[in-house]
Image 1 (cartoon, rainbow, N blue to C red):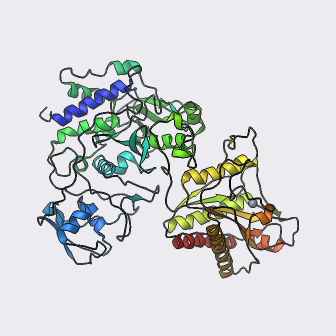
Image 2: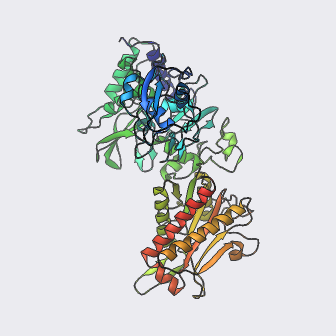
Image 3: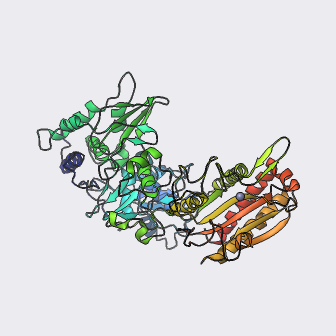
Length: 621
Ligand SMILES: [Zn+2]
């Protein structure tokens, strides 16, 4: 084949190594490091008067323009003598250095909605390298919206090389959204994505780790799905490296083992393989022979390591295992795509959202529940993971964690009317979901500690490590959830109850024994003020019981588990500003009559949401 060149050879060699690393007894390294296509070249800093012309339109930023042309905003700044990047004006004519002139007729793709779908890279300067550079990421600043930030997950792709690889290998379609910051794992800079982990190699190249390798996730059951194990006989049939027409035979092997038709189903495995990366994405300069594309797709998937197989519990699903991913055909909608293996690895590392079947298999893994945001290096067992630093790896700036109090067997307060029973745990969830909904629509990142009628510690574990299963385990699970999610603020939503049916009104609790207690107090006041105002505007004149240190409820020197510092009975405390809101007394008839009304719950949610927004804004977020 005419496209046999150095690049293809190196990719083919990489494929061979994947094979080795997937073969029992021949594992080269747990992390599955493979030689990669050459590193991205540093974008030329030389300004040029040649290139496309573009007229700035309303809503454009230097970032959005640079991104849509596939160049760096710094190069546009330089070429046009722009000293203050926030000062591009509508109607201003810009030279886009290095961009092909025909791109001038193509306006930058509008910030698509949903916002995180990145614009298709437009033509970039000719590059000698097999991976032309994508626009370099830069910190968000005066230019406003950060184009490298993905609202869906709350993470950005901050590393030039990762950003470049992301763009040149199919973006969200291939990798999904980023689900971590960049961090150090077993000696490598890595970033987790929904479908894979990117790894920066010492030579500057980027590869994805072999997630299914023995050292990472050699599992066959994840979240109720069962997929085939690697087939040793099939591994023996993979063409040997160095043999005649090795690369052609390798691709032939992939073609034969990834059928588009299987068992009378249009599984489209080979089509999905070939459609992984588009030529225009990999080579926007159009200078590479398109015949290289199978090699690129081989780089991302490796070769099939199993025959197609039905999910034993669901005949609508057919799986095909590759070295670096599992293709999933879903008969109900006819789609074929890679499983979210990166998310599964993250759930093993953090313990959040870890499905019981995966947990059972991963218990002996050195990654299992390793993330501990309050420990040195962010690790629960640092000796198991040398060369690893997970501090801040999963923390998100501006994330709000809303905690609907109680759940499952913990009912909370209640009020029995003749026609309806008000149950606190249900009301908490309802108001929390309404609050989250409002915040998300205003662009905030929100996570709920629970989204159904269950405890947060579910299935139940001894989270506190005291050898007992108590209510503390559920409360600790809520604390751990907020810490692991990397929340900036924590809001626990409750309704009140008291032996005296006379007590009524709203109050907000905060803790005074934390390093950030002044902020707790300020957040509590903001929440209370907004709850009062919002319910008043809806026609409810609530009694204002004020903001209160939580020790007034549990005794001097004591704290609510959710808000207070760690102590001998409580291994971990929340690491962020937090309050606990009590919207009304269910044990008071007048309050309960109002709680019965959806309009009142809506007003509470609006108040909570506005308070969070105000507080975050005042904190610069
Ligand atoms: Zn409660």
